Image 1: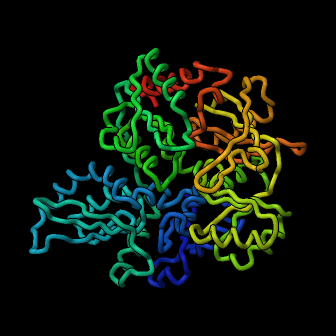
Image 2: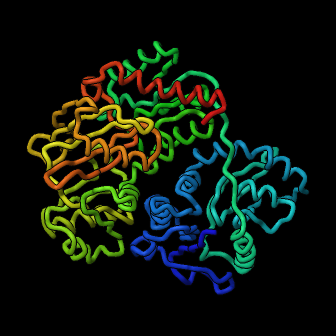
Image 3: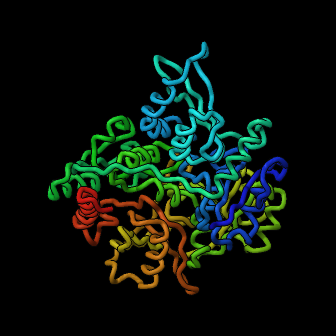
Length: 495
């Protein structure tokens, strides 16, 4: 059985009345290398806040990167962060809520709240409902608000803060936690798709889209040859997403973004979806990727995670490991946004101060100059294209973002997979396989010291005349055939 590790903001948050357990502070979990090496661990994240990019958020994120089983998982945190997301899962609970609560005598009150601790509650007649809510939103401490509007409905679901529990709640938590240690929860069942209509989510106003208009037309053309009806949709089409069998996201993905909500809804509807929500979560956060690649011993530039609490001594920490210049990255930037280069101590401190306003953690990385980066496209654990991206003129990045939203890009060259350097393709495939079996673009630098994985992108560029320069129409057909294969497999009862 996995060892339980309780993570809290402050050790005093774990009340003396609660059972004896292994309790550590979140700062230690995030920064102490001992926890990176631990195996067979279940992390129970009881931080006071799970807000995006808070210490509580990073606790769950890094637990997943380290291979620790964690409660709550990042997907659960994101589900609970926005009504637009958790409303999808609540649809499956409506019948259970109505059947359970209509048997209760309604008082004059039109609302009430239910506290759920590891799937248990104090009210015997509501325990089955509490268990279902916990299985749908696996979060250790939950408070569910119900409201009567011609019938009982769930009005809101939110995590409870450990340090704000009253004595009665602490007593209930102690009992529930003791029972929880010897049981497991189940995952919600996924429904299978049965038709062959593909939605491609895109943003026609994006100046740097993953696929340009010509590439999107190529997908539509390839779909017709394969018997797949391809529709181009935008964020306004969220309500009708379930009409399709599959979703292909050709929009820049982020977690706090409608693209992630689309992926979550498609996944909950049993659709084939690329990028799937797990891949989005794993790829869009550079802190997660850094730990994942490090834990699996893949070659990367020297990397250090910087914590907001160390802001006053950040220069000493960085200078102990790095020479200037040093690269600084926000956790979830894309297209070279949120990536900065500090040439000296003053610049380092200025950049870090700005970045720490928005994130508890940032990434410091060794600066490796190369004239170009390799990008290896991986689909279902198979390399499908290789491209070189050259640095923008008189700039150290591929995309040079200027004032007023202006930008410039360097050149490119497509390669047959078999003619690209074998070590580049091999290390890229290893990195992508750590994420999943979707469509990924792995960025690799190569110099006299070897090859280094820079990052894994969950929605790599597929632009006409660039990534398709070698395979041409076949690249689009190859990707859509993978959708057909997955749809066929689900229809036949496969995975």
